[in-house]
Image (cartoon, rainbow, N blue to C red; front, side):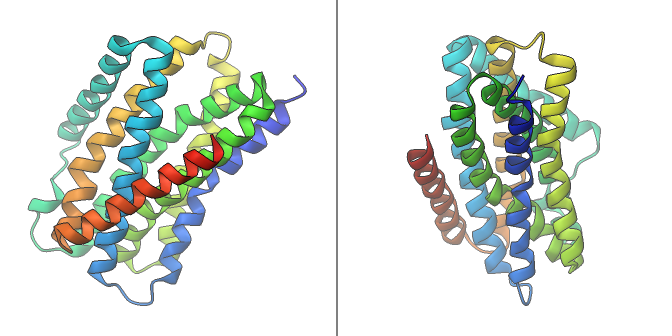
Length: 249
């Protein structure tokens, strides 16, 4: 198809925009826990809003209320058991070892965002192949909400390691899964993929993001700031997502 090259360019642009968020790590002169509380609250708000308003809502529209919500909760169940299997320790109950807490938070968030970006990459690609004029605003919208996701990965890693390079690398790697998802979708899944399968995948990813937000981001944000700082960041994250979707959709 003539749109294949442009579709992949849009997908790469959307995925690697997590790197923009990771540059936040370069702007922090000294670790300050109140910054972390607000930033993680912001990322939590953005991820919650995306999960319910974008991913789950799109899934309900494509596959119906029952299937979408089943997939949504299945995503939470799967990540819960993976959480138990890999021996995860809840960050807000660990001993007061900041480096261990922050690095674990960043790594787990990177994994969750990578899982989120994979089907999202397929969504951008398929939308662009079907209608390039629709694919462009979808890619831009996803790029915008990938920025706070990059923050969610890079800031904890920076606080844990004090390495700006590592903070950027983790965030960058999580964004790579978006073009990888597009490539996978085109090479292996595209001929079988339909709105039902994609809708279920998006709902499941939404469930995974919600689990990570409540299991990791919010507890850490409260632990190292307070509930008011966390809520100010959370509300701000939601408002930014509302504004971006209003302008671009």
